[in-house]
Length: 257
Image (cartoon, rainbow, N blue to C red):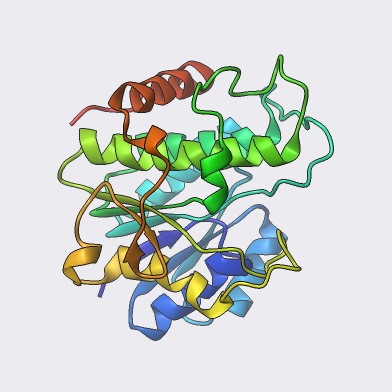
């Protein structure tokens, strides 16, 4: 039995992954943005061990989430599932002065990875749209560029793969991988036509399975199979640049091996 934290598990694919993990006999800790969502999550996922509450748009609350998780002890796996979508019509600014999409989708998993006790496995949920992300890593917080919600989301999904690969390179004792669920019908994309039932299973597989394909590190997967990511993600210099920018914007340093 493994013990897993699933961020963004009050609904959607995160909740589905949590439910499947519990069905398979694992211990699961949920995460929700606020207390009301937390109560809903616990009601919707019977058997969950606990729910941690934090708004990942806030650096202070994300730091607190890491502290809450560490107080529960180390996890065998963390699934970084939480994300906001590409429909924001303008650059929404967080309390920290950052673009909302970047704060939740990129900076929060970076901060949690840096501050939490290291699990045995890390799973970062990306998207096929990471291929459209800007590999230059210029203006991550969209302070100078004209706002484009779709591009901003695609950027963050590229960042998630870069983060997964950077961690895999820096922490060889941790199995760090990224995956894409496919274009499936969720609150983010209600009209999507992909295989919803298959979407969450790769998260669970990478977090718990002993299949040799699931126990490597630095991989990218779709529906339980390896898939080639954007070529930009394999560049160690680009990975390190993302870490440096995230450190600058968050004040949190990623530990070395």
